Image (cartoon, rainbow, N blue to C red; front, side):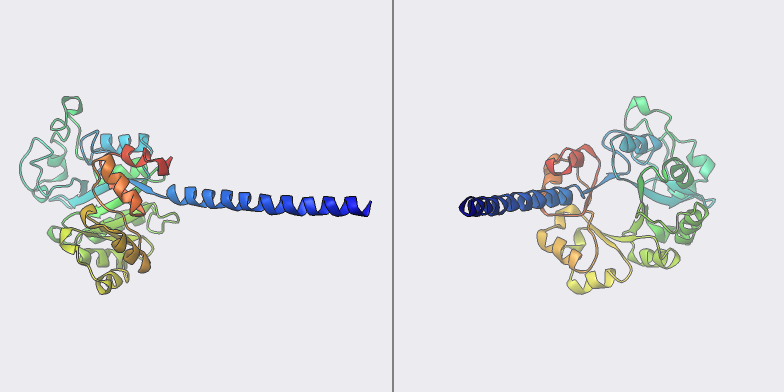
Length: 283
C-alpha cells in the first residue's frame, strides 16, 4: 500500500511540473497579444483616404471603421470662429481661393469642400470645431492639431475656452490630445489646459533630435509625433525612455503600417484606418 501511495505521489508531482510550463507559456502569449492590441489607430483628417479630408463625412467614415481617434486641424476665421481645415488657404480643398483667416465663418461655409475629392461629395462643408465636438465627444478620441497658430494670435485660448465649455478640459481617458508643429504654442496650450495630454509634432528636420531635446519636450508634452520617415527603433526607445509616447504620421500603405508595428510605436496616424486594423497584431 505504501509503495502504491508513493508511486501515485511521484506521478502527481511529475504531472504538475509538466503542466506549469504550459500555463506559463499561455500567459506569455496572452501578454504578447495584449501588447500588440494596444496599437492606437488615428484617422488622419478623418478617414481621408476614403472621403474629403477634415469634413464630417471623413470623420463619420473613421468612426464607422472603428478608428480610436480622428485627427483634426483647427484654424480661425476672420471673425474669430474655430474651423477645421488643413491648409492655410482654401484653394486645394474647396472651390474658393484665399487665406482661411481672410474669410468669415459664413463666407467659408458657402464653399464646397467635397467636390475636389469626388462628385458624390459635392456640397460638403467646412465644419466648425464645435460641430465636431458636438458629434464625436465621448464617441471617439479627438487629436486636435493647432494648425499654424502663429497666424492666429490667441487661438490656444479660444480652443481652451471651448473645451472648458464642453467640460473636456479634464479628460479621464486621454480621449482628447492637443498637438502642433509650433512647440511654443504647445507650451502655451499646456499651461492653459494642464490636465489635457499634449504632443509635439516633428518633421524631417528633427531626424537628429537629441536626448536633451527630447527631455525638454517631455517637460510639457506627453507625445513626440514625428514624420514616419525618421522613425527607428532607437528613436522609439529614446522617446519611451523620456516617458513620452510616439504616434508617427502619415501612413498611406500597408507596408508603412507594418514597418511601424515592427518598430513598436504606440500609435499610427493614417489616411486609411484599415491598414492598422488589418495588421495581424491588431486583430
